[in-house]
Length: 544
Image (tube, rainbow, N blue to C red; front, side, top):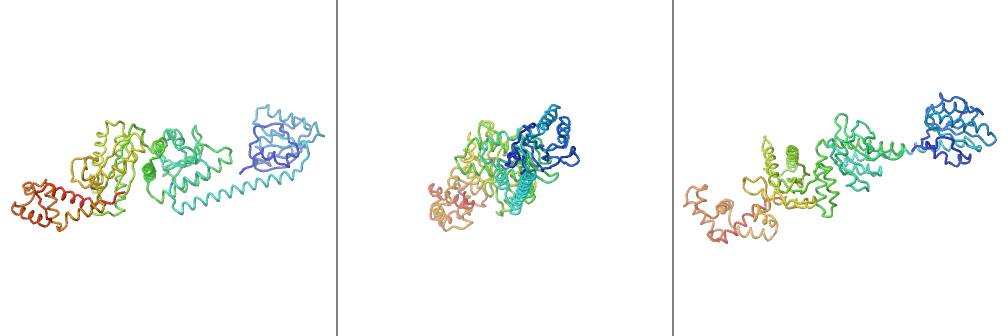
């Protein structure tokens, strides 16, 4: 922490000399680097700048011209100020100093703090006290740098999450911090007590107006202190402190903290090797927050969503894409599929000039909060997005099979997020339907199947299905499913694949005997159909 001239003048050892400021009243916040005692007429070769010069004025005596020349030389050398000890018994020297200070000021030079001490003080005491303060401040800076270094080193060694690094940065600075990517999307932030909607309001527009530099620098009309994040030519974002702290020392310390945080974030990214992950993580975090509480402040939610690229709209639509696990449910395989689906979805949204928040909801499901330009455009927009996505995911060897479930559009983003559970249920249930022409499904499309999907884990429903289907094996169950799909029409069933009616009728008669019911009875067929659907739906993953 640097020592300012105003602080030096307020020390007891200096105040004992009854200091009188002759010039530079407005420049007393200048930092004092060192104290130099000298009586030489020219000190230019002995000074490096930033020193506080202590003298008794013997260098200029009682000459105003020599006093002006002496002060001009000190000013040219870049000193922080000059303290001249001239007691009351030397009135001519005091007058010469005052006249010289006025002359230097009148010549239009930058103000040089000139202070007269009207009483005698021991300069050795002044230098001792000031140097002790300066060295203590330097040690404090070194200790602060060491602590900051340790904090971010531990975060790097512990592979801390991006949000944790940003939170610790804001904690060290005592001020808000924002991390954005190269597209000016806010991927993490810590408000530090400031309202999030105020911090992030219209972020992308404000951010684009602030030029990014390859080094830590203050830029923009709002005086953002920023540091690049990333290594060399692979810089992928920047860390921003909106507003520079007051004072050069505080600004220097803030720059140091930001730079160390930027390095930790760069190491974090190298460890992840995921150039698109941060934005998706940020979107996932916001979606989970919106789903987790209904008391979320809507204005704050919209501001944060806007900072992540979601356009303000009259309505927002919950959409869930349920991935077919295929031959297995290997977690790593599903994660790769989710990531591929998210990337393709982002490409479709960009191509269609739409915006959305999208993230993995749970294993095998991608949640989407889609901005609707108008409610009347809902079906057309869904057809286009789902159609384009189907075309992209079906191309190539790595085909992705998915089912889209849609909830109800809401004017509030938080309400739309609450509808993701319904959309997920519809998408998961629709995945058990036979392939059709539908691009997406609503709750009205899954009907009884949707209700049974909610009840599939109920012990009473499980017991009902087991009781209805007790005594039949897999071939019998397949025959029953085909019979029920044909609406109990034996002729249609025979035509659909069985070689002869006599053979079919004989197998159905055996099936009736094993079930203990008549397949011609409508209520029996309904009960069996419900049991078969429950058996099919029990293969779905647990709800949640």
